[in-house]
Amino acid sequence: MIDRTRALAPVVGTIVLLACCVAVGGVAAASLADTGTDLAAPTPAAFDLTASADGTVRLVYVTGPPLDVSALAVIVTVDGRPLRSQPTPPFVGRHGFHGAPTGPFNAASDPTWDVGERVAFRIAATNTPRVREGVRLTVRLTRDGLPLATVRTRVAASP
Image (tube, rainbow, N blue to C red):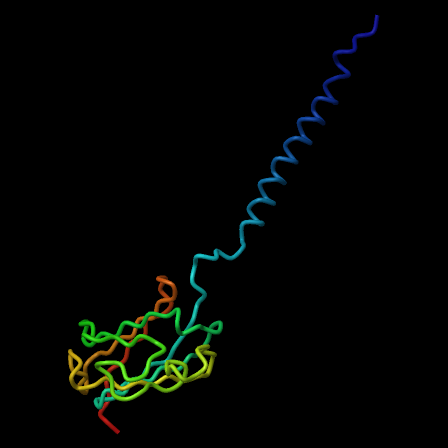
């Protein structure tokens, strides 16, 4: 009589080995497939900021995707204290600011802010805290409630 139980060991071993390979391959594929972009996370953007004692604030969009300025919130602080009246792009003749801003912050301009474009606005002396030479001015930009960028500078003397 022939004993067939011994012949099953290589078959069972092969099936177990295949199952392990499939499981490890599935884990590897799942980890590689999970590298997609999180749509809730903001896309990185970089800006350059300058400010002068006459209240002029200039932002240059250095890198990032095109931005719809109507989806932006802008928070300006002077030595850590927020301005009483904040810029709300796009705008013209907003309380606490002199005149109209330039670039895409101007309500009469194209609201898309592209790399290389400049924005400038002038904070009025009636807006507090007052912008003076040497103070630290910070501009925080958020898009749809998510942080986009924070840039800081020391206010320079008026030109």
